[in-house]
Length: 226
Ligand SMILES: *[C@@H]1O[C@H](CO)[C@@H](O)[C@H](O)[C@H]1NC(C)=O
Ligand SMILES: *[C@@H]1O[C@H](CO)[C@@H](O)[C@H](O)[C@H]1NC(C)=O
Ligand SMILES: *[C@@H]1O[C@H](CO)[C@@H](O)[C@H](O)[C@H]1NC(C)=O
Ligand SMILES: *[C@@H]1O[C@H](CO)[C@@H](O)[C@H](O)[C@H]1NC(C)=O
Image (cartoon, rainbow, N blue to C red; front, side):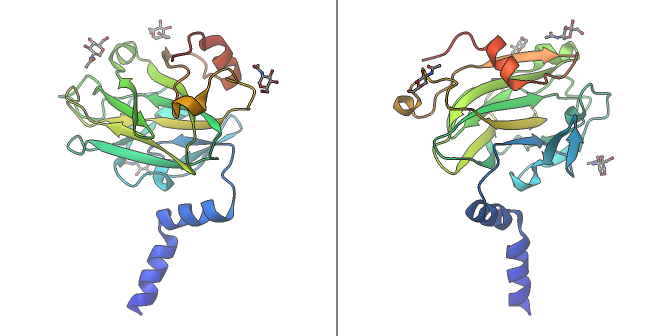
């Protein structure tokens, strides 16, 4: 009986499901992950997944202040004392992905922490950037960062890291992985650099959500790095 129970527990654990899914089916072309959400939601015809299948640490939290975008209503908060918290997302090895991260603090760390924490975001073990949403947050805006990365394995890891400048629990509101067609970024030699960052931007926005990633990319990517 205990053995059966263990088996059932393992079988239905998110890790096992993720692993077995990745072995039997191909990953989709991308993932829209609504961090801290408890269930799937349909937003403007696109399906957002809860993040519980991609991460095993942190706590889902609700924002109590009004937000402009549905995905900002929830976030996942991570304890400050642990230096790294990682999402693991199934990908196609060798494909390029646009990774977009969105942050809206919403005061979740309490009234004695009115300012959002500043922390690191890390892709496949490489520091992507420091996440500083302070200025946008003062203006009531969320912040997003966008980069293009090469999938080196069957999973890509995205981590939130605490650093010396992090003074309260770091968090994330949304995480998007979108596969790129081969013709885009043709000119960048990803294989020589392993993991390359083509563009990095942060925007605050209070108006309409950005509907087209392609449109966004063509309008924002002007200065490839490396
Ligand atoms: C967040 O809101 C959802 C939906 O209203 C609710 O089910 C959930 O318990 C809330 N979570 C927390 C941590 O308050
Ligand atoms: C974050 O940004 C704010 C506003 O631009 C700035 O004052 C602050 O020094 C930054 N914090 C860190 C740790 O870089
Ligand atoms: C992309 O690469 C293919 C084959 O190497 C080439 O034919 C095509 O012109 C390239 N496209 C761009 C936009 O560089
Ligand atoms: C951010 O908020 C300010 C003040 O509400 C607004 O004027 C601005 O358009 C917003 N967006 C950006 C990108 O700063």
